[in-house]
Image 1 (cartoon, rainbow, N blue to C red):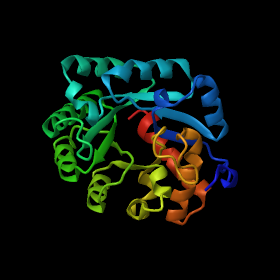
Image 2: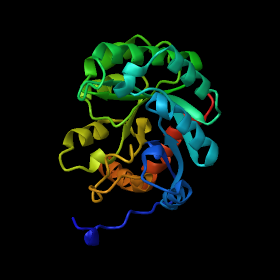
Image 3: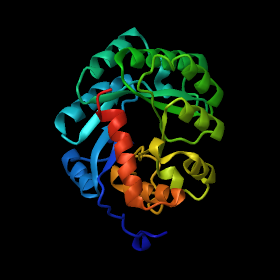
Length: 270
């Protein structure tokens, strides 16, 4: 679809919470202006996600500078080779900030395997234990690692009082059902608008709306009809629109429930 024929991003009355983006990766020379554009699209709060030792402090700086931005602290499975005791201490220190709302992005990725599997499992396991000790929810990445993700989670279910979210969910229905049964939310983003994402739409259809979170994972995974551009939280209404279509419910009703889901998981005291 050409730029000329792209329909505008819809506007909704209910404010939206962006539960997973990477603001420090956005190509913007003026973060304040970028956030103003995002907020004008109806996004009232954003959670920017830490992924590596190098951006733990960057996330903390963003949450300090901008009123609408919250964050996480954690190490992505791609960076698991860098997980050690000093990084763990930095994560714990970072979570003391009142605008850090979760441990993440943590988990397993066997598709790219930028880190050895056993190293990923160890980093995932240790960060889940930290989240339990800190009484924080977790933001989990899993790709092509359903069995090991389930096995590691099973060891921590008793210690994770607030559970968390399996973000950008593209895994099997079996893993979805397990995670939902154990109290986790599932996060959905622009992938659900892709023509070849029937599997993701099937998971959305099977997920109770009370367990759905909305995200963009920007600057990645730009929703249709804007694929080919860098993603931004300003496209989050397109994700909401598609999820509501799959759930066969009015988008404002969906947004009201999902906003409550996001608030209760990340912003309300346990």
